[in-house]
Each structure stands twice: as structure tokens, then as C-alpha cells.
Length: 378
Image (cartoon, rainbow, N blue to C red; front, side, top):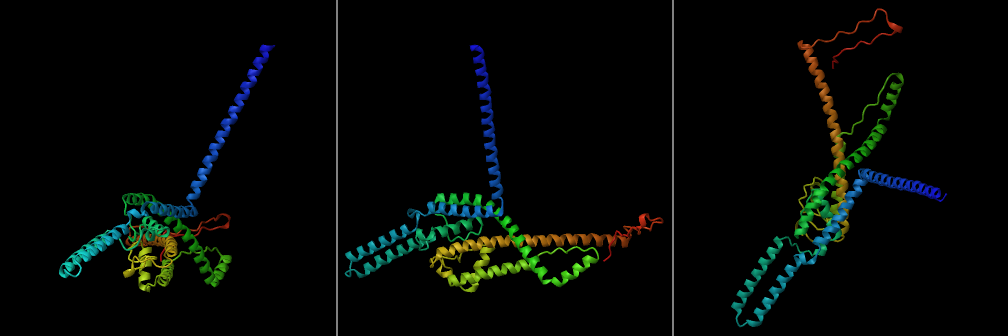
């Protein structure tokens, strides 16, 4: 009896262990499936327009903090070199004045002129290296770094801010390699989103303007077969949208920066066209006053960041809509060319025009076939 009880307990223990193993394996499989589903949902969301836009903004913000940490250190900035040159020049002039004084006037003039000439050469060397009179706190703040990141991965490249250190240059290369494909995805997605929205608005406006025609077409539809004509956004509408957006930026930057309207329009066009000359940048002045930080420069740089990001989406929208119109016109021209070529071939005797189908002698169910021609003459 004891042996049988032991065997029964072993069997029950084995069955229980098998059940527990099966439940644990099923739970692990469920957790894996949940992780896979979460990853799939995350990837699908990041491929949407909202996900790509958020990813671009997040990438720019992370890059701004990274470049502040790399390039924002005061020991790597040109201000230290200029301060050293300035202090050495003052000390040298004081020594000349103290030793020579007015007893050796000519010698004093010679030594001072030589010292000032060396000071001038040193300052010119530092300016050629990129110094523009600003400290590292004025250049590598958060909005300026954000603008620098935008100019890198959108390929505008203003050139008003450049990395000085070796690590900064390496980080710029890696940042551009990863950021440019991300920007291209954003460019295409935002182009499709803006194109769909603008199509919807244009069709609604077109139908509101042509209500009388729509009513007559509805009456014709009741009489016979009718199909609504395809409404294509013309290229002129896209051009007017870009002109309006550039005009808005021209007025906005002219009022903020005290630029002329020509300079402001010049900046808007070169930025949206990704030319990026860099002689005019919001928050850093422009022209002869370039490099002097203006009031509220950080706010202006953030607004300029949003202005350019939305402007790139509008350019993608215009590209998508113009491409659709051009492809439609090319298909129409191709069809018309084929028809005219076939018509010329018929006239020259290269092709034979099909005769119309004769009417049947005994029509079935009282119906007659329609007469067709293979060539449509225009």
C-alpha cells in the first residue's frame, strides 16, 4: 500500500510539474507576443505623419543638447584668446610708458607702434579663425543650437555657427548621416499630408464657386449617365501658396529684425530653397551688423525653426501636387499622341479602319448592338 501511494504521489507530482511547465511556457509566449505587438504598433506609429514629425523635433532637441555639451565649454572658445592678447598688449604698453616715459619720445612711439601692429595681427588671426565678438554663452545656447541642428539635417547650412573642436566636427558628421534620411522621410510624409488637406480645401472651394454648374450637372445625371469630373489642383495655386508664405515671413522678419523688405525676402527665399548663404540669420542680425545678438533672439530662433520646418512641408506639398498634375498631363498627351498617330496611319494606308458592326437580322430580346469605331476623330 505504501509503494502504491508513493507511485501515485510521484504521478501526481509529475502531472503537476508538466502543467506548471506548460503554463509557464504559455505565459512566456504570451509575453513575447505582447512585446512583438507593442514593437509593431510603435514602429507603425513612428511611420505615421505625427510620429515622424515628433521624431524630427525630438532629434533636433537631442542634437541641441549634445552640441551644447560638446561645443559650449568656455576653454574651447575664442574669447579666451582675445582676452589674453588684450591683457598682454596693455601690460607691454604700460612697461614702455613706465621705463621710457617722455624722455625717449621717439623710442616710445616706435615700441608702441610695433606692439599695436602685433596686436592687430593677432586679432585678425583670431577673427579669421571664426571669432565674431560673441561669447560661448551667446552662441551655443539652446535656441541657437536648435537652429544649428536644423540647418545640418535639412542641408541648409547657414554657416553662422560652426563646430570648433574635433569631437564637435565628428558629431556633426554622424548627426547629418542619421538626420538627413529622417528629414527625407519627414519631407515626403508631410508633403502627402499637406497635399491631401489642400486638395480637400481646393475641391470644397471649387464646388462652392461652381454651384450653378453642379446643379445643371445633377439634372443631367438624372437624365442620363454622368460622372463627376476629376478636380486637379493647378500649379498656379501651389505657387500662390508659396508666395503667400514667403510674404508672411518677409513681413515678420522685417518687423522683428529691422531689416529691409528686400533683405527679409532674400532671407526667406534662400532659407526655403535650402541655399543657406548665412549672411542674414534671425537673432544674430544681418549684413554689417551680423554677429550682434538682438533682443529676444532666442524666441526668434525658435519661431524661425518652426517657420522653416512648416515651410519645408509646404514645399513638399507643392512638389507632390505639381507632380500629380504633370503626370496627368503627360498621360493625356500620350493618349492623344497615340490617337493622332493611328489616325495619320489610317490616312496613309498603314492601318485599316474597322467597319461598323452590321445590325443583326434577328435581334435577340429586342436589343441592338451599338455602332463602334476604333478611331475617335477629334
